[in-house]
Structures are given as C-alpha cells and as structure tokens.
Amino acid sequence: MVFLKLLLFGAHLLVSAALVVLVVSQTTRHEGLGSVGGDSSSSGFRGRPGAEEQLSRWTAYIAAAFMALSVLVFIAVEKFKW
View (spheres, rainbow, N blue to C red):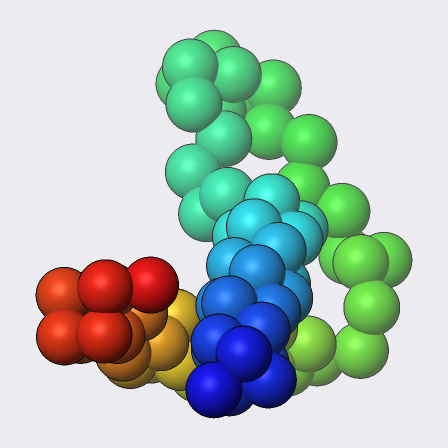
C-alpha cells in the first residue's frame, strides 16, 4: 500500500511539474500594448511551423492527466486517509 501511495503522489508531482514547464514555455499570442503602436516584435525564427500547436496539444494532454491524478489523490486521501 505504501508503494501505491508513493507511486500516486510521485506521478502527481511529476505531472504538475511538467504542466508548469509547458505552460511557462508557451508564447503569448498577443503582444500586449507594444503591438498597438506598431512595435510588434514577432519573429519568424521561433522554430518549425506547427511547433506551437504541438506544444499546445501536449499541454492539453498533461492538463488532463493532472486533473485525473488530482481526482485520484483526492479519492485516496478521503477513502484511505493517506
């Protein structure tokens, strides 16, 4: 039972860290007030086309895994009093 507890909490920790890294590494789609005055600093040299879409897709997968693991941790804490 202790192994299952460590596995669940460890997986939750890794998935939450991965989610933070993925969210922070995404670029914003709006430049803020800098684009109002024509100071848009959009660079076409960010990587191959589709890399942002792939990063967004992985963020959605990791977010879904984080939500599922959060529910499992909640159930484990409430039912098994971990």
